[in-house]
Length: 215
Image (cartoon, rainbow, N blue to C red; front, side):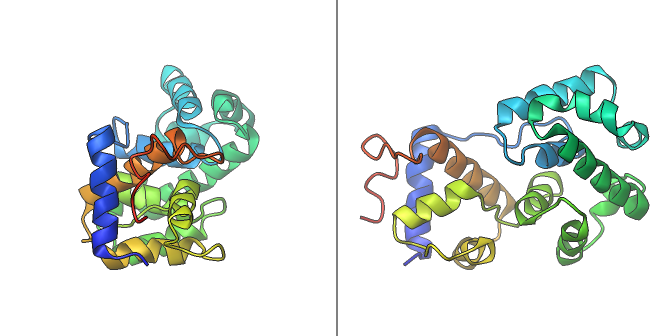
């Protein structure tokens, strides 16, 4: 069963192995928001290529994206995969962002976390992981982000159940860790790095920093 002690042991083991990862790489909160929308079902290198395309075209801007035709936007973000679908989802988010906050991140920061999360989840194409990524990494709110790696790691160490969903797994961390933005930021980044390098579908447990954790 997960506890403050076991989660701290995991954090310390991963941090010792990888060091501080400095995630999320972006030059502005808005870039984080765009990246959160584009990273669904793809790897970060593809997202970086898509964001670079937007920058080179002078399109990494709220109103530029809002005014861009769907087909043109889709072509710019093609490297991120599912580019037509993601162009629509990104436009949905931009419309919400402009309608509610005039495209101003600072205005958005004035709103409570619970209200923002509810609003984000009401935008077509935004699920819990994307909403919480925006809250944590763009708006500095203490919301723990859960992804497929998180569940896989916990499941393999008998700290969650197969039927547990996003809410149940997120609660494990929210209940046992201090609600601290830098901690949640670093912890999620370390989980992703561990998942990518070691806790794959075919695991590499011998070299994994969590190989002996909770055994």
